[in-house]
View 1 (cartoon, helix red, strand yellow):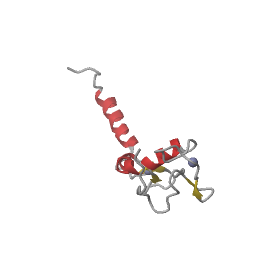
View 2 (cartoon, rainbow, N blue to C red):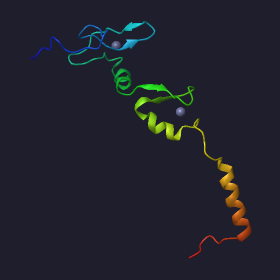
View 3 (cartoon, protein in one colour):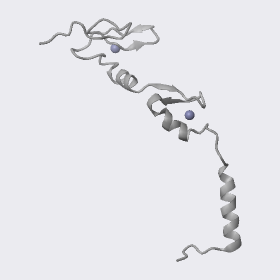
View 4 (tube, rainbow, N blue to C red):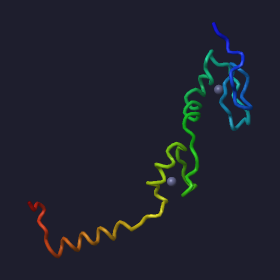
Amino acid sequence: MATSATSPHAPGFPAEGRCGYYVEKKKRFCRMVVAAGKRFCGEHAGAAEEEDARKRILCPLDPKHTVYEDQLAKHLKKCNSREKPKPDFYIQDINAGLRDETEIPEQLA
Ligand SMILES: [Zn+2]
Ligand SMILES: [Zn+2]
């Protein structure tokens, strides 16, 4: 079997064969022994892999909520905190008035 003696690791990465999940409460990596080829122990595998793949960041428009970094551009287009060009009730008001005055039938072929 091939043993990768020099596998690339990020700076501060824990010992090889140990869980690489950073435990914020402890201010260190988990360091549990992991199965061959795995980066995280059973306890952290799910959470860590999700975190690793998708990083959540604070929304630049409203730091009260977070958004996946890879979805930021998408989120900015529909974020509740972004400036709205026109208030919704304004458009609704026009429609209501128009309908009331002219009495347009529902189906007009
Ligand atoms: Zn762990
Ligand atoms: Zn937002």
